[in-house]
Amino acid sequence: MGGRQRNYEEKLIAPERAAELMEAGWKRADLHVHSTCSFDVLPAKDLQPESLYEKALGMGMDFVTFTDHDTVDAYDILGWDREQLVPGVEMAVYDPEFAGHTLHVNVFELCREDFSELTEISKVEHDLKGFIRYLKRHKLPFIYNHPFWFELHQEPDIFAVPKLAKLFPVLEYNMHELKQKNELTIALAEKFGKGIAATTDSHSGGIGKVYTLAKGDSFREYFKNIERGKSYIVPEDLTREILMEEINTWIDLIFEKSQRTRDIKRYLTGIKSLDAMVRISRSTLLNYSPRLNRTTMSLLYMISNTGLPASLYIHSKENLARKIEKKIEIKGQK
Image 1 (tube, rainbow, N blue to C red):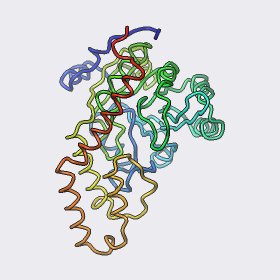
Image 2: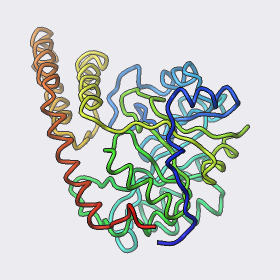
Image 3: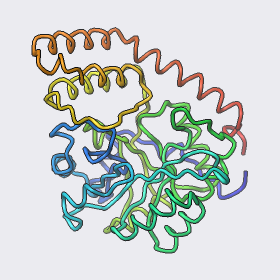
Image 4: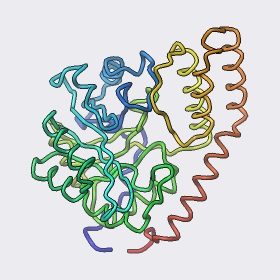
């Protein structure tokens, strides 16, 4: 592998160090957040764009963005010109010839017209290179999301990931990925001289648990410094404990905060226990039996707190991460 090598060992910092940088004027943002406008987010009030926007501002985020799946509806709800709000979207691009599998791309500072054009290129033409040409021509900031994540029931082309990474200015360090996968992403960024951004990819209101720090009076300047490697990240990786907390949060959302709303759209997390909970919660019987609903919720909490669902999921993903690392052999090769 060629390109400008960077050492990211010192770029991963603790919140205490981040606080010092923010005192010195560095800006922070969580660049991958989902609201109820995404198909796989439960219809809870706390997850609506307005609620998340206010939460982010209350946390002191300098830039706020919502990257819902293939939709910019959040900005029609909030308004496209709200203070500190940066229009964004997560777009799935399936290019069977060049990429071989679907990849997800976060795009920022786009307008409705940009979104329509990009949708045509990604959904009709299936042209990743054309998609990226459009982004560069219109000078839209963009990120290669979770490079070593692959869609369910799709055979991934693992060997394509390094060549795909070359096309992007910034790669994502995703809180919902295992440490092994995030280390591979860091290695790719180092090899090819790419920027790195730490994000939550939150689907349950966990905005800002991890974030990226860079200087910049505008989002454009902020993102350009991330591209140049003039940034820091406050990271966190998926662990058994974090996943248990996440599962319990979803139980709360499904059975309480969503008020058993049945307008739950297509929902696939890949975590079988979560998907099963959604199917159970949509039961007509539970909807009309508060006692049974509470009993079911308590039972699911009990199962989750054993740690078994989280452990099984982590174990399966660790095996996959080891296979990926053996196949592409990125780490340790300078």
